[in-house]
Length: 82
Image 1 (spheres, rainbow, N blue to C red):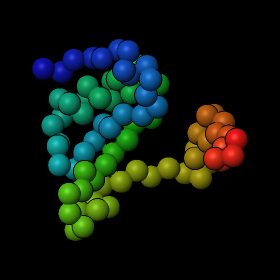
Image 2 (cartoon, helix red, strand yellow; image 1 turned 90 degrees about the vertical axis):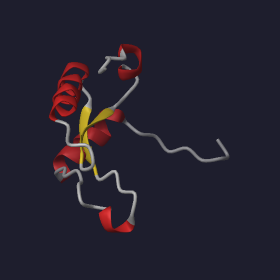
Image 3 (cartoon, rainbow, N blue to C red; image 1 turned 135 degrees about the horizontal axis):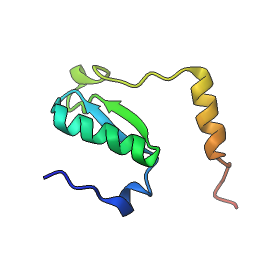
Image 4 (cartoon, helix red, strand yellow; image 1 turned 180 degrees about the horizontal axis):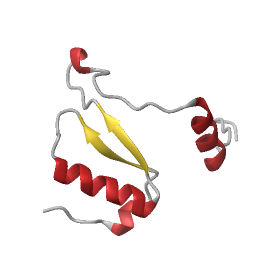
């Protein structure tokens, strides 16, 4: 059964809502609702298990949206000497 794991979802930044190998509409709709409810980035993936399948399903994002997401999370540089 599909179960909502609230504590786990609160720690996530994104959730897979579409997978080329698993096109179950019930699971996709549930994942899309969770993405909206928890403010998660909806992701799509090839789930490639062979070279031929890599890139068959992918995410597209505009440069503007990418910059906005990077700025939102404010990544910081770290190195092994810090």
